[in-house]
Amino acid sequence: MPKSPFTQRVLNIQASATVSAFARAGELRRQGVDLISLVAGEPDFETPEHIRDAAIRAIKAGHTRYTNPASGIPELKDAICDKFERDNDLYYDPSQIVVTCGAKQTIFDAIIALIEEGDEAIIPAPYWTSYADQVRLMGGNPIIVPTTQDSDFCMTARQLQDAITPRTKFVLLNSPCNPTGTVYTRENMNALADVIAGANVYVIADEIYEKLLYEDAEHVSIAALLPELADRTLTVNGVSKSYAMTGWRVGYGAGPQNLIDLMIKVQTQETTNTCSISQYAALEALTGPQDCVEVMRRAYVKRRNQIVSRLNRMPGVSCNMPRGAFYVFPDISEYIGKSSSCGCIDSDVALCNFLLEEARVACVPGTGFGAPGYLRFSYSASPEQIARGMDRIEAALTALYIKDDHS
Ligand SMILES: Cc1ncc(COP(=O)(O)O)c(C=O)c1O
Image 1 (cartoon, rainbow, N blue to C red):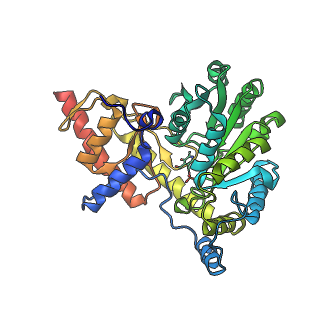
Image 2: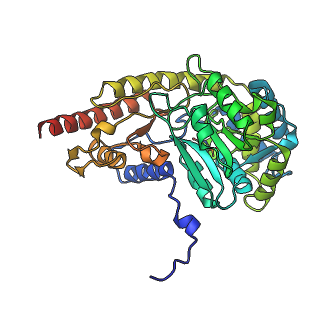
Image 3: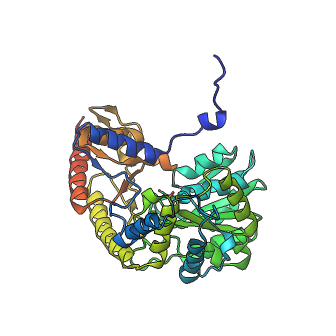
């Protein structure tokens, strides 16, 4: 076999499971298939009008060049520092902020700066699809810590302690979590903080769903818990999810000066800056009226209640009530091994394909999040879409359940 001209690093990783499922759903829709997609990792709301207006003003004012500095316009960095102080009890100098093309780039640039060949990164599963492959791309080893539905998908301090080795470079924490909607409590976070404080490791705290919290859930930034952690934590956030701005591509990170300086250096060789106009829009998002966030949050609460109660009424499906973000992550492992018109359902991936073919509903298999036996549904869809999607899934799964029990 001739040697591949391409790098093993890239050949070894998968395309993002969520982006691929999203593309497949879009393709079927373009073919005229009556598909209900519960795939999207993005709000179905329009970006609020005052934010869009700010972008139009930025264009008209001629903010159409590379930004200076490339790591974020000073007004936006100031607004980000104010946000961290106001919401998270975190105090940064603007020089400790980097603004990037989405939080995805913030995380990747940190991984580029931190991971050497053979280094380890601790990632609790289920995890957002990009973390592990970004670590692999840099030659590192993701150390996946499995969590269970019974513990509401929380990594315990004991699990974390056991996973740390001399090669551990960082621990990834994502609360509220995509795909489970888990929100770590203050008690959980304190216990993890104590372990991390006693180890020589960094933390990447992905807090992008911070504003989407339900009932009494509280958002806790780990960097604010212990002073020594602030020096080793990159806190990641962005405007994509809270302000329905996924297409604008603005994320940001705040952390120790030496790490941020390296990330800024990487960015100068990579994207230079995120879109100038988007930066003015993000400035308006962070400094303008905030009631739009609450309007969207309230809508998500209703949709979450709707989808969780529907899923839990289906045979063989069990779903926790998430306390944040806009995803549900039901256990569907009872369906594995059942036979369908599409052949044996031997995995969550096969069940996902079956639902696409039979029910014309798109979702993402848990395998893409390091958790086989589950499916992820986004409830960032209209209540009508959710209701129709659940009707179809219920019919398809019930038929599968009954057929198999009688065969
Ligand atoms: C947990 C998590 N982190 C980061 C991101 C990246 O967001 P963006 O690059 O749009 O800011 C996403 C997007 O789906 C996410 O779910």
